[in-house]
Image 1 (cartoon, rainbow, N blue to C red):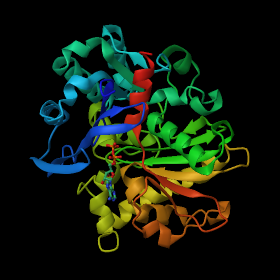
Image 2: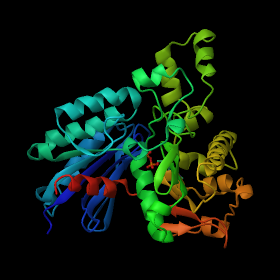
Image 3: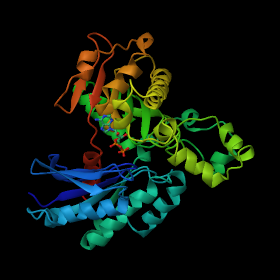
Image 4: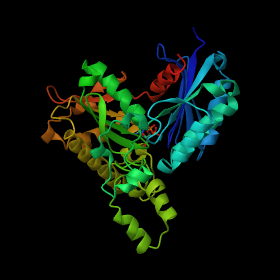
Length: 401
Ligand code: ADP
């Protein structure tokens, strides 16, 4: 039975997750993550036979170095798991309009993912590093690599939500439109909510907030995503670790015309130097750092407030997409699952739409993979641990049935 395992590589912007699992019973034999990439004290944490291990691996560790650590852990595994891996699933952020379903990776697919890097410059190249590593270190499984795309979940978004109000030819000719990202996580969360609330997926209306290094929010009506905050690229929408999210496009003209910055510099500012990092004056992009000092440090206070205000605005706006029925609001991702402060500050602004947070539940430690934090008889607010790896493993295996 233990011979059809899937290795999943989920190369995110600020962390790199991996998992060896059996999609049939969801059992994870080895899983973990490299965290604090490109920050001080990068570390790797992993679980093997339910035993937790953690090692510090240095400062400012890159994705390539992290992948090497992960491969070492897999190869050195005492249960010889490596011989049981049959498939490798990869999270790929941007599939463009072409990839609306998972696909077995060949050279043409790799080329197309590379091409889509213009729409996800912070992600697709990193996803490709994972694919390269898998091909290099597991050559026998060359034909068993699968790409599962974040953008697939959004291919049903209506035209009025995916079009930008710029000359239509930019869509027609260059496919400039909203694509979204984080779809794998939003999909998992909506399915999980449907089970928890015992509402059929095709009847479920929810707003899902994935808050991590990158953050996004989706409106899901009758189980189908009808709007999401990330756009042509994962730069639009909520405030993120180093990404600005929404800005007035005129800021770009100002930076260029008045400040003399060239377009590459501006891109770098908006993608790598903004968000939490920008709002804290370059001190940190890591939410844990600012959460601890919210009440004592002005930089932290400012950053958290902008983050939560933007999020609450989006939640209110998305209620208008749900035809008058909101079954739940869900928080997930590193911040969404762990920051009671973010949940409190965000939800306390939403009384008008019937949201009432129970802060005892919100601040309590919970051991399950989900918990409610709303007051009785108000809109259910759920915190759910996301599991992108499980979705990727299931979708990967499906292609070989
Ligand atoms: P990625 O987008 O790279 O997948 P994650 O979902 O792992 O990111 O989330 C990373 C973010 O979550 C970081 O900003 C990190 O500081 C934040 N985070 C992780 N644990 C906590 C915690 N206990 N409290 C607050 N924030 C946390």
